[in-house]
Structure formats: structure tokens, C-alpha cells
Length: 109
Image (cartoon, rainbow, N blue to C red; front, side):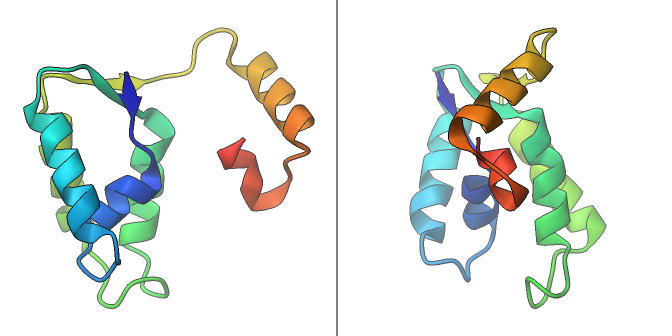
């Protein structure tokens, strides 16, 4: 299963990013395809935070624009939104410890 992260979601929706066309095509292919694919639930909030941030994007998406963009993606019948299970916290502790991840790198761990 392919899992899409925040960077792919944002780049696919914002033309100013160098890989916009590549990521938009890939996201469209996944959304319209039959193969199962996924987005971690945390990426949805990250997408909203980044695409509506006025110091990061000029102009940023309005809240309705950002929500509509995600709503279109979430309509894909082959998509699964990944949510944490009961092993989530022990796995987070293990991942950040093994990677020595701190600060902004925690989410990447």
C-alpha cells in the first residue's frame, strides 16, 4: 500500500512547488485508481496548517479552499485514512528513540 505524506499533498495542490506536476499526477493516479492507498490522519491537519499559513504561502489557501481540496482527495474510494491504534504510543517512543529524533524531526520518525 502506498501512503502519501503532507509534502506530497501540499505540493500536489500548490503550483509554486517544483514537483507540483509530478505529485499532482501521482495523487490523481492514486485517487482514481483501484489500488488501496493511504494518508496518515495527522497529514490532514498538517495540510491545513501549511496551506493556510500566510507566512509560508503567498497567497495561502482560505480555510474553505484548503478543506475543499482535502474533501476532494478523501472522496477516493480506494483511500484509507490511517489512524493510530493501541500500539501507537509505544511505537512513537521506539521510533524517536532509535532515530534520536527531536524537534521538527519527530513527525518524520
